[in-house]
Image (cartoon, rainbow, N blue to C red; front, side, top):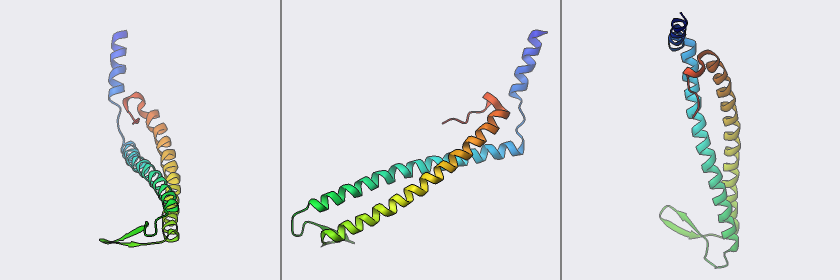
Length: 133
């Protein structure tokens, strides 16, 4: 009788019904997980870009040659002064940092919603569902 009860328990764990709402939550979690990965990659790349722009400003400020700073326009290069370069790079940094801030806020919102869905789904499905990376 004990063996039969254990066998019935195993069957009931494997035969958990997935309601339409549960499937919607699983799908939502999956989409959020993809968005999280996209945002994480964007944040990583933007941080790298900001550092590259800052390095470029330092290089431009250290350039002592008369026509040492050139700006590419299409296929041609034209000489530019240090102020033009630092202003242009400053604007690029500002744009990247704004986007970085927006993405950081969005990734936090996505993470919060994913955590809520995890709680709901793990409460229903326990160890029969894997929501980890």
